Length: 82
Image (cartoon, rainbow, N blue to C red; front, side, top):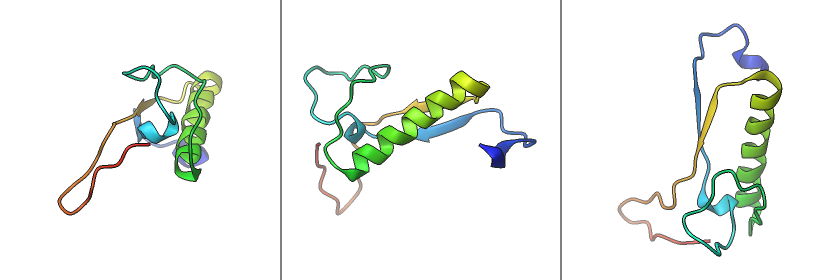
Protein backbone atom coordinates (compact mmCIF):
# COMPACT_ATOMS: atom_id res chain seq x y z
CA UNK A 1 0.00 0.00 0.00
CA UNK A 2 3.03 2.26 0.32
CA UNK A 3 3.00 2.85 -3.43
CA UNK A 4 -0.43 4.46 -3.19
CA UNK A 5 0.39 6.90 -0.38
CA UNK A 6 0.28 10.45 -1.63
CA UNK A 7 -1.45 9.41 -4.85
CA UNK A 8 -4.87 10.49 -6.04
CA UNK A 9 -6.26 6.96 -5.72
CA UNK A 10 -9.91 7.19 -4.76
CA UNK A 11 -10.85 3.52 -5.05
CA UNK A 12 -9.08 0.21 -5.74
CA UNK A 13 -10.96 -2.55 -7.57
CA UNK A 14 -9.58 -6.07 -7.14
CA UNK A 15 -10.76 -8.95 -9.31
CA UNK A 16 -10.60 -12.11 -7.22
CA UNK A 17 -12.15 -15.39 -8.32
CA UNK A 18 -14.62 -18.07 -7.29
CA UNK A 19 -11.48 -20.22 -7.07
CA UNK A 20 -10.71 -18.50 -3.76
CA UNK A 21 -13.79 -20.23 -2.27
CA UNK A 22 -13.09 -23.77 -3.37
CA UNK A 23 -16.04 -26.16 -3.64
CA UNK A 24 -19.35 -24.42 -3.01
CA UNK A 25 -22.03 -25.94 -0.81
CA UNK A 26 -24.45 -23.07 -1.44
CA UNK A 27 -24.76 -20.53 -4.22
CA UNK A 28 -24.25 -17.70 -4.53
CA UNK A 29 -21.10 -17.43 -2.45
CA UNK A 30 -21.29 -15.14 0.56
CA UNK A 31 -18.65 -12.47 -0.16
CA UNK A 32 -18.12 -11.88 3.57
CA UNK A 33 -17.59 -15.55 4.41
CA UNK A 34 -14.03 -16.02 5.64
CA UNK A 35 -14.35 -19.82 5.84
CA UNK A 36 -12.96 -20.52 2.40
CA UNK A 37 -11.07 -23.62 1.33
CA UNK A 38 -9.25 -22.91 -1.94
CA UNK A 39 -8.29 -26.04 -3.85
CA UNK A 40 -5.07 -24.91 -5.50
CA UNK A 41 -2.31 -22.30 -5.36
CA UNK A 42 -4.24 -19.92 -7.64
CA UNK A 43 -7.23 -19.93 -5.28
CA UNK A 44 -5.01 -19.67 -2.21
CA UNK A 45 -3.23 -16.65 -3.68
CA UNK A 46 -6.54 -14.97 -4.55
CA UNK A 47 -7.84 -15.61 -1.02
CA UNK A 48 -4.62 -14.25 0.51
CA UNK A 49 -4.99 -11.09 -1.59
CA UNK A 50 -8.59 -10.68 -0.41
CA UNK A 51 -7.54 -11.04 3.21
CA UNK A 52 -4.73 -8.53 2.75
CA UNK A 53 -7.07 -5.93 1.25
CA UNK A 54 -9.66 -6.46 3.98
CA UNK A 55 -6.97 -6.01 6.62
CA UNK A 56 -5.76 -2.83 4.91
CA UNK A 57 -9.31 -1.51 5.01
CA UNK A 58 -9.66 -2.33 8.73
CA UNK A 59 -6.30 -0.80 9.66
CA UNK A 60 -5.98 2.10 7.23
CA UNK A 61 -9.39 2.57 5.60
CA UNK A 62 -7.83 1.63 2.25
CA UNK A 63 -10.68 2.06 -0.28
CA UNK A 64 -10.91 -1.37 -1.90
CA UNK A 65 -13.72 -3.37 -3.46
CA UNK A 66 -13.29 -7.07 -4.17
CA UNK A 67 -15.28 -8.66 -6.97
CA UNK A 68 -15.46 -12.43 -7.48
CA UNK A 69 -16.73 -13.35 -10.93
CA UNK A 70 -17.70 -16.96 -11.43
CA UNK A 71 -16.41 -17.30 -14.95
CA UNK A 72 -14.31 -15.16 -17.24
CA UNK A 73 -13.64 -16.76 -20.57
CA UNK A 74 -13.25 -15.96 -24.22
CA UNK A 75 -13.02 -17.52 -27.66
CA UNK A 76 -10.89 -20.66 -27.62
CA UNK A 77 -10.98 -21.06 -23.84
CA UNK A 78 -13.04 -23.76 -22.16
CA UNK A 79 -14.91 -22.65 -19.03
CA UNK A 80 -13.83 -24.66 -15.97
CA UNK A 81 -15.09 -24.67 -12.38
CA UNK A 82 -13.20 -25.21 -9.13
